[in-house]
Amino acid sequence: MKTTLRPGSALRRARLVAPLALVALSACAQVESVRHAALNLAPGRIAPLTAPLTAPLETVARPKAPLAAGFKARDLLTGQVIAFDATRRGDAVTVRQSDGCVWTRRGDWFAPSAAWQGCGDGAWATGRAEVRQTAALWPLAEGARGGFTRKAASSTGKTYTRDTACRVTGAEAVIRENGAKTPAWVVACDDGKRTRTTWWAPGEGPIAFIVAHQKNGVEEAWVRL
Image 1: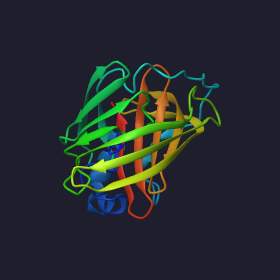
Image 2: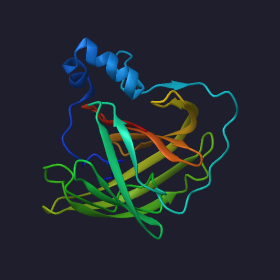
Image 3: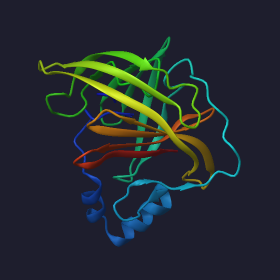
């Protein structure tokens, strides 16, 4: 993953960055994308459509595992439906994505992945990591902060140590493909190279997700169906 959803993770497949993806779409395709993917096409921005909350959002306690179950989502870069098939073992979850990338995360959705396989074709396509929490993010509430340190090693022998800082930046409603508005906390996790932003809905978990590379722009973006 990785960290992952790469659902996170930067080590996933090679993707078209947002500007290229938008240029490639015809006018018709862009309209279709907006209609079906709840996509915000504001200049220079790839993100789910959102709306202000009509009431305060409840705080959220940390769940027993990073994901309760698998799900499907709309890829905001391609318009395709993608699947995240999840298998739980205690407080860990292993997820197989539609593109064949498999990653495992323990204890916390926002933590970097502890293992990943087949996530792209580069030197970091497969690997493992030692992940340590340095600050607790939960319960999710306005201004909450958390952090992790990851020591990662790829199957090709490459290594790195990186710190990830997470914080709750606010709360808003995500407009789903069926038009429903789902209240969610917005959590941004920055490891100095990529920022992974999750919209986390009480009782449902991650309902939207974006990975943005500091230099290359948006690499991954989806809204849960």
